[in-house]
Image 1 (cartoon, helix red, strand yellow):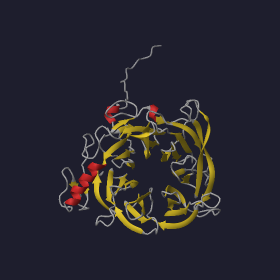
Image 2 (cartoon, rainbow, N blue to C red):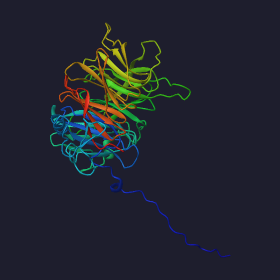
Image 3 (cartoon, rainbow, N blue to C red):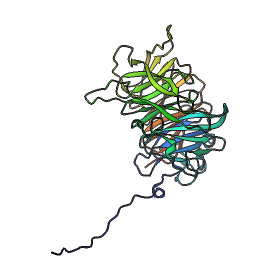
Image 4 (tube, helix red, strand yellow):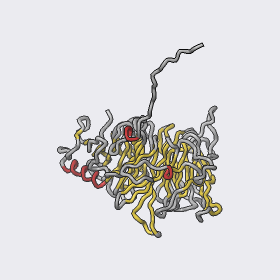
Length: 457
């Protein structure tokens, strides 16, 4: 028996090369995080590539002197003459979209060749000062939580030269695997970090980096030596802090902050997306590792319900938390119900924090996060409102709402520059960064005065 052989067309599918789908170097696309440097000279902006249009996300660098110069031109003209390369928005006559970004060419505000590629779905950024021989070197280490890897990715930035380094020597590099923290002790025989790394807290002086995990309730602890030329390493992952909620047994960690940064034995508070409870952790030192540094572990010290010690609270879906400079007040923002809660975290006679709820302020639906800053008139809370496109400014002492300002679609992250009297907000659904004036007594106080980027249609 003979079989007839039929020639069939050969069909092959290939993925696009990196250069075909490389993300734009000088643009924002789904910005999810931004962080002003300690010197307040630069700001780092994370783009998450949430629609997977490109091959990766990015971390880009903005020159805040250049942003200020454009803002002052616009304010100085009395909102009459937009700076060169800027477009006046018809719907908001006092706001300028500046500069218009095509993504391929450096702009007046983005630092040339100071953008790196990271994984998709980045969430948060943190910064650590670097030292050389015990003296600040001018270098920074940027940490980024990336859900797509999942990893905590780290990038070195030399602020004087504005050189960004995360592995390859290139003008637009993709961060190498060596710059992605993915396994405990970087040991292939030990577990990977859990999925969905979310918010970060970087305690640079204590050389600790903490990352929460959205769907497992875990907290990852990395040791981050602050001496230049050193390498961060994951030391511990602990996810035994929460009681499973509902029939699905859901857990989830979100907000995290140290009560007294710089104190290696200080408490680190963590909030949950599922449970109306805050847990406080401490870093414990163990035996020395081969590098001569002690292995570190996370231990639970205490916990309390959001509505009071010993009383089960109804509030849930906490988003973020932060502390006053002296550690005696904690501010926590939650979505169910939308509110900012204030806790007395001063020490009692036994040396333990009181953790008493002392105030509640109702806020907008779907608050995304919060920041605390003093621009010259006392501490203020800044809350971006994801669903309403607003930023609320709240007096942190009286809890009175001082202003509500429209900034764009999906504001999701905020960072501040007290010396420049500026608030910066990442508009996730607009691909823009809003700049708000925070100068006390100015006619533009708490108002948007510039919009960086090209709004998505």
